[in-house]
Image (cartoon, rainbow, N blue to C red; front, side):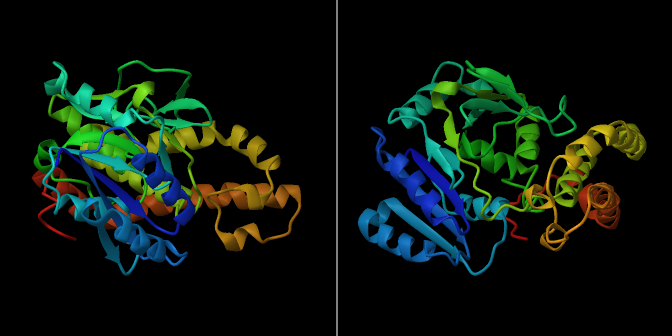
Amino acid sequence: MNLSIVIPSFNRKDDLERCINSILSQNYEDYEIIIVDNGSKDGTREFLKNLKQKLNSRLKLILNSSNIGASEARNQALRIITSKYVLFLDSDAELKSENTLQLMLNLMESNERKKIGQLGGEIINGKIRLGNSERNGDGLFSWFDSLKMKETDYVPTSNCIMPLSLLKELGGFDPYYIYGYEDNDLGWRVRKKGLKCIMDDKIAAYHHVSNTGRTSNFFLFHKNRIRFLIKKEKFYFLIFLPLIDIYYAFKLLPARIKEFSQKPLEKVAWLDKSQKKKDCGKIKKILILVIYSYRNLLKAYWWNLMHLAETLRIRRENPDFIKNEI
């Protein structure tokens, strides 16, 4: 087997079916599909059982009783893979054309293969999304109509192909990123090996970005961002990181207030459901959103302080997360 396609899944039956159909329509056939389901309750399990009968040995299933996160789900798949290459897809991704797999493998096998560690890309709302974890420290993305073999800081694992040998050398995904920044972390480790992370629109996948199963809030974003910086940055930078965050918090405050004043609470994706239900005036709504967002920044720092010893151990030892389950 030359290629293993790994898809973590959680309560996205319809998205998953679309993703699988885009794989089955490929003109390249030397692959297996490994789906790791994290305790779905929406009929996904029944769909997978029927799919298994249809695809037989081409499909492997790992069925977890609860949601262990996408990172550890991918590690579970890596423990049983023997293929040369691994393609990671999100369950709400869709391969762009019937030639996508063949084009990916052609690029990986090209004369530049020794320099490419990651290859892929995602199309959201008709544009290629590129995120640079170092230069865009605020988490913003750049958008392009097209990209040709563009080097980037990381390739999103919504659609990312890598050699299995490299993944094993890196030790897989850091499972402490339950959701968010696991892509940044993996891409950083790829580049530390002197390899390139490349995006190209001809092998990009449509990423429909389903909200189902996604946890989106300021705490999780900042918790993972701070942890990622602790793992990779110089210690003198980390000393000033809280001051940098305070500076940008106040700098962005006017724009935040303007944004919040124009957006109803129920439209704020990262806000707790209990907060969304509150019925209040414009000023109170702004106060709720501002206090909530910056309170979670402090909470993220506290979490990282409590887990600092473990993060520093991982920074120092570079553990193998494939061999050692959490």
